[in-house]
Length: 104
Image 1 (cartoon, rainbow, N blue to C red):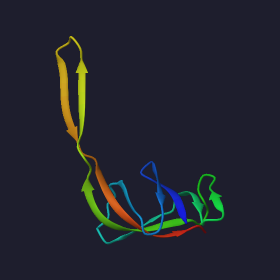
Image 2 (image 1 turned 180 degrees about the vertical axis):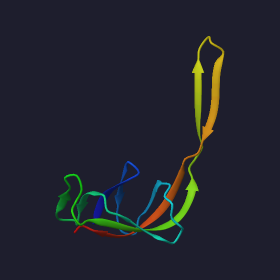
Image 3 (image 1 turned 60 degrees about the vertical axis):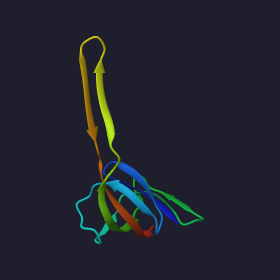
């Protein structure tokens, strides 16, 4: 059983027991989150596709931790203009453990 849900403008695949890293969410570790924007779901034999979301479907998850991803380097450069800028960036994330997938 799995579901594709959307949060923060991105789509993620949810399976019970699996951990997923999503963009940062304001929630304490140990608290429960519910995602109701389920775009597609499958119970193994049938597939339900939403138009745009599946009615009555939801994904419940538990917040495991918050953190920051690997550093990426943003380097801007213009040749022959004596212009070069180097900047690092680390994107924040929230790691969640999927508890349950309900397809409605």
